[in-house]
Image (cartoon, rainbow, N blue to C red; front, side):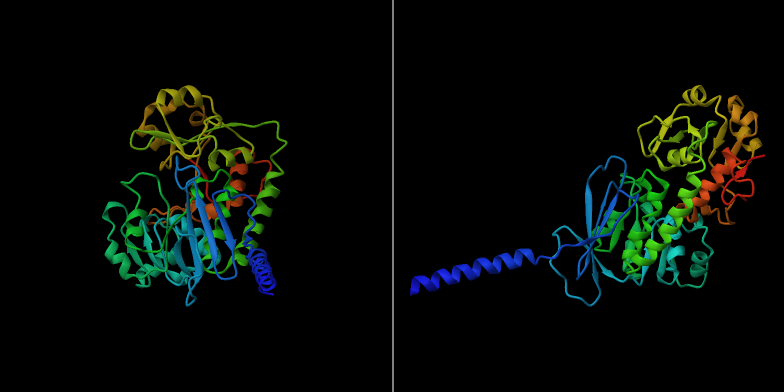
Length: 376
């Protein structure tokens, strides 16, 4: 009898273990169409956000964030997860690129701190500072962690370069502040950068709205793309200009290179195996790009005369001789903030339309430039 009871007890224990295993919750994973550097898993009690490739050379190193509702007990979480309580009510941004998703998701009311304010184009961000609703934040080596702590942010969004002289997130982590390092700028496709709106929306429980907004952008982008894929005439394009004596060109795997290709142009340095900027000597630039049909993104310059004043050797580029020099500085405010780095990141379909108008004006004869202008 005792032996039989023991067998029954063992059987019940085994069945209970099976029930526990099979009832373990499977997360719902947010479907992503273009972005490759983050993953969002939805559980019944929380969300797990995983971000990878945060800087050139970081590779597959990952950071895990647990998004847990406020006033909820902490569930069982990965031991290395940094916890952010949601929905976020007080947001600090350490780069103006995050203003694009903030605009589209209408999150300004939560914005309480902004770094690099002079680079911001968004008028509402400046208005919040002027009214005392948000504070300008010092970044880099001048950052005051104690002042930042006094703002009591629920979330700090930043990015990283891998250079400890510029990156602020290690100090914020040590201060136990809720900082999340984003990696949108490391994506290869313009639409992949835009899809990071879903990542930001997760902190506000606005995933459905973000998905709808993103799908609308994709639809318009892909509609434009269909009009350039069968083009036989594809002009060549060079990019950038020296800054501080160094000429960095976007790598062939960058979103800039991809945008040129989608607009029906062949990028001179498309074969460079890099997502970020690559420093090249002027002599090599001249050798590779002297006959390029177009010159885009020539740093901060706003006229042909200012380019030639900076360096007379620029006259050696065919694109300058023919007047085919375009810069994306049409929407720069009195502070110097350029909207291409805010709205342009969130709306690559508008950037693509500008590029198509530049390279193939016959395709979009009625399009008015949003971000670009031809230098005179």
